[in-house]
Length: 75
Image 1 (spheres, one colour):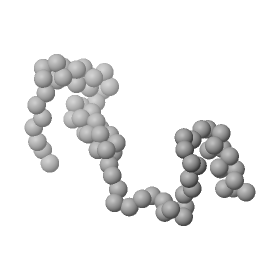
Image 2: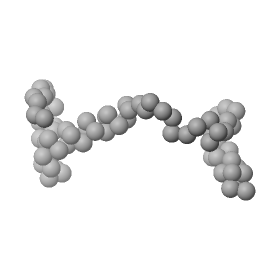
Image 3: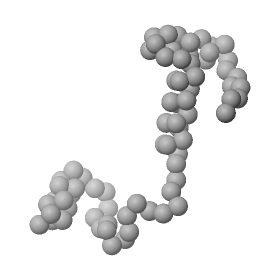
């Protein structure tokens, strides 16, 4: 689908320079930026894991907490 995007002169200039630096088209950079934005803000209808597949560590989690929980799960 084609559509029009309006940018300020400064934004368009920055995008043009970035495209030239990377050897890519402005459209390609814009599509990548849009995909990253949509992925970052995506929500899912169902959780990745069920409650039975998870466990609560009871508060803030440290690296040591993660290592210990993984050790317990593999034992």
